[in-house]
Length: 112
Image 1 (cartoon, rainbow, N blue to C red):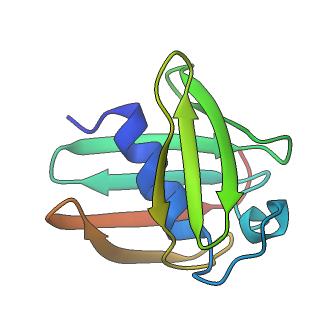
Image 2 (cartoon, rainbow, N blue to C red):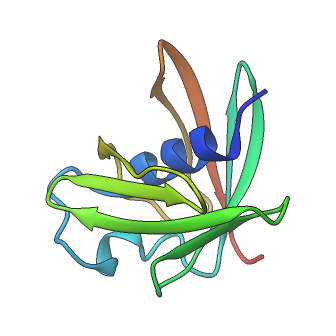
């Protein structure tokens, strides 16, 4: 099953342009919307906030930040992980991208 940490990282990687500025503008497409990520190991639903936090439909979450060309996620009680970003997107967008040796399907649904 896809863990919240894995799903959050996949979502954040998918939402931020490769040459993102080091601020929250790169994540605008996620704010106020629902980010769904599906991989071979499961699905996760995430919600990103402009204040640098994220949560999931299960209630778990943590912090996110942009660092140069990377997005970094730190789940509550866990270690921060940073990955190169892949794509900027907004509500209504859906695509596939490589993720941990397989594929992830990322869908941004308008609203919560």
